[in-house]
Amino acid sequence: MTTATTPLPSLARGGAPAPAPGTGEGPLDWFDSRLAKDPDAPAVVCGPDTWSYRQLDRHARLIAERLHGLAGPGELVGVRLERSPLLVAAAVALARLGAVYLPLGTEPAEERLRALTEQAGIGCLLTEAGAEPPAGWHLEQPAELPGLGVASRGEGPAPRRTEAFYGVTTSGSTGTPKIVLVPGAALANLVRWTCDRLAIGPGSRVSLLIGTTFDPHLMELWTALCSGAALHIAPEEARGSTAGLFDWWREAAVTHCILPTPLADLAFSRPWPTGLALRHLSVGGDRMRVRPPAGCTAVVRNMYGPAEATVLTTAHRLEASAAGPDGSAGSDGADRVEPVPIGVPISGVTVGVAGPDGELLPRGESGELLIGGAGLALGYLDRARTAERFVPGPDGLGGRVYRSGDRVRMRADGVLEFLGRLDDQVKISGVRIEPAEVEAALEAHPSVRRAVVVPVRGAGGALRLAAFLRPAEGAEPAEAEVLAAARARLLPQALPALVRVLADLPLNANGKIDRAALAALVAPAAVEPAVEPEAFAEPAAVPEPAEVSEPAAEPEAAGAAPEGFLLATCRALLDRPELTLDANFAESGGTSLAAAHLLAAIEEQYRIRCRAAEVMRQPDLAALAELIRRRVSEGR
Image (cartoon, rainbow, N blue to C red; front, side):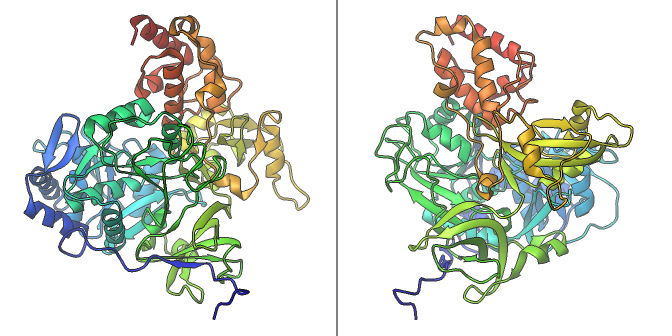
């Protein structure tokens, strides 16, 4: 019996699964029930093109027929398609075949792709029609499916994971990416909760905005298809700038959207647009600090969940701020600099907070988050790794649980607060990165004997990776060459922003590599080591435009010297004080989210509109300055 002097244990249950959005047992059944009920309802909208449920199903069946003999029940199929109607059709086709959908992004690094296909025994890839197939693969472009390429290789029978519905890759500490396998029942639990709690159904217009290498795109895709809603594919402009995002929301009348936390923070810092149909906005991927601004009419939820627990584990609902448009204070009275809680478990999910001994802690104490219930993945492709992270739960929690490695605290009211990581894992632009995987990629270069990668935080607050290389005997590593070789093995977010070659690596009193001393070597006046666990999961905080450059009173005055504005802005955005006008934005660490901040700064300074793709394809900052100058002169 719990008394006033005995705090409750850190344990919370989300209750029974939510009602199903259709008839049947899971996502494919629910899609089929919607197909039978209203086959001519819009299913996928991409710009001017709309596919009905009937048309989507027809394309899915064509893909399934084309894959006959190449992919069967339980076989992993690599998907290298961009967000498009064909991607959606491919997901339905693989579900019909009982094959396992494994999203790899449109342009996975060559060595990473090779490692993944060999590790998983993948014998079939779905690609864009013009994509170059991997060496040793045969590519066909079916005439009946314009835009789709099917790549295959003549190897023996592939391993089968018949319980898996989809897979997703995450960074691995051994230097090889991990593949998480998720059963259909776990995805079904997520779809049930999302459709029920967010009121998604016929007439809803759901975004497909998240990149295809991230599992939340499956939450977007299947909640729409299972509920009879229309899935609206976001244009690149909506993913690259707040102005483009707001325009798309308004023009497409989007009712439900998921945003990565850094883009949401940027959107919440702008005056909220009027005339939106947006009813629910889900935010996730990093620690949320900025509340929705005054005027935000959508219900906003901060969402948390690892891939090993099927996208979403907990959610916390926020109301629009009662303060100014910058989201400086939430309705719960929280200060802007205080992170938003990650909330309570969704239906079907159980969470607990455990100490070093694996037992549940009293509420109010910090420990490791354990996740159990209907949302659990099957585990990793590697059974040994599965045994390490998926373990029997402690007394009170019971069953099988996933040890998340995240440090949390459960408040007295059962709400969880995220505090950081318990291991070396870091988050760069919303992507979980294992420094060991980056080190292994760098050490693959023959000139490198040892590589050490540490997270550092720059003057602007952004977290980035710094790499320190010890040369092989008689070698002189060229930083650019080592990075170029590593680029073939790593996600773009995992590439170190800084590389230094050292004859010897410093050791601490215990004879181990002194990572704090290494971090201090990198611009000690401007960069501090991210050694506290809390820092390992901080978002890449980016200064607002007003912090990096004072806006000019008139666009004409600013337009005379965009070079100086760009240098100041990009140096602050990327924490790269050494940047010059001949630097390439993308190669200097500029991600799509950093580009969104840069576009916001350009729009505020010059009152012009540029697209993220234009920024990313400019050869250097000097060329971007010329683009700005042209747009100013054209008045657009």
